[in-house]
Amino acid sequence: MEIRSLYFDGSILHILDQRYLPFEVIDVECRSASDVWEAINKMKIRGAPAIGVAAAYGMYLGLRDFEGSKEEFIKKATELKSYLDSARPTAVNLAWATKRILDRILLNKEKSVEELKEIVLEEAKNIEKEDVERNFKIGEYGSELFSDNDTIMTICNTGELATVKHGTAFSVIKRAFEKYKNISVIALETRPYLQGARLTAFELKEAGIPFKLITDNMAAFIMQKGLVTGIITGADRIASNGDTANKVGTYMLAVLAHFHKIPFYVAAPLSTIDLNIESGKEIPIEERNPDEVTHCMEKRVAPLGVEVYNFSFDITPHELITGIITDKGVAYPPFKKTIKKLFES
Ligand code: MRU
Image (cartoon, helix red, strand yellow):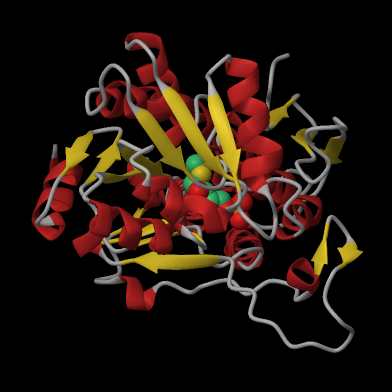
């Protein structure tokens, strides 16, 4: 079965509603910027690169019926960018994609409103196409770090569903599986949203990659038993110094990897690196609805009235990261220097 997180049919942005996978395949039709905002905010689509591409099309959907002067068009595009960026705060790919659209508009100010609309659509398509190419390269570079008989642990979902194609960390796993003998995976279920159990398990199964699904709190014991040779995760935002925001639980894995002397890699396209911030302290961490913690698959499991923390992401300090795999190659410590070099290459 072909998995497509999203596609634009020339008029409607189709989003595969990830809240109902793996059992139901529901197509969400986005016809306006607010449809896209809603899809991102409610996690019908999720994963840093995928929400970036969705937001780029959201800009187009919000501008295509615009009528008015060029100044008003630019004002509307600027407002739309802020609006779409507000759908989710942590993954920088969202604001990165909307900025690319806005920058293209500003660079072509001399064009007519109708021409600018075409430029916006063209840029959204570019962002979509580039995502496929970038993720393919991540798979090529990252797979070099693995070899026969490796068992790779991962958290959350970083596959085709989280991107346009290939995935990020998942792209590395898939390429390693194609290249080497006896590759297997340990996937964390990833409470509370269960991206690991619902989405990664689904994608691993579809790809024919052997894997075991575990609850998040089993990770330490599995490492202690020597069942893991490498860990790879995606990222939602990487600061200039290499500090990485990713699905909550990633930091826990990095600490455990350090203790057990297991290499810990992060895989992400350059669009996930935020050079405007120095360290992870500056990354806003999304807090989601408490119901996600008090409930499991929409069934209440905690007593009424309990207070919860529901941080959706955490920050892994750069000191705990062995290497950052990007579409331009692998960066090693000191990340401040090596990340900068990747952007210059
Ligand atoms: O809350 P989500 O499901 O959007 O979180 C996704 C992750 O944390 C992924 O690991 C990250 O976006 C990288 S996906 C290629």
